[in-house]
Image (cartoon, helix red, strand yellow):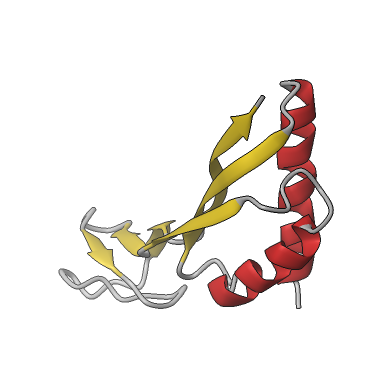
Length: 114
């Protein structure tokens, strides 16, 4: 389960930032997670609660925004929704497509308390 290592990394990053800002508590953490990123959101939430326990992020609300995946055709430039890493362009039928969103795993914001 790689979600635990991701959760531990998130806790490390946000607690380091909180310490840098001399915060006493982390109230919330907002993430963006792409639907084709390979991260199971429910597992990440579960792992986060365990990883954050006994840290200044222990009571933090974890807000996760799931990002819909989209592809862009290299042939005709059309953007279209996808549900897998390989996709066929809806307009021209080309398989020369790039995933342009949906693979994100970003810490969008942290709410700190002094």
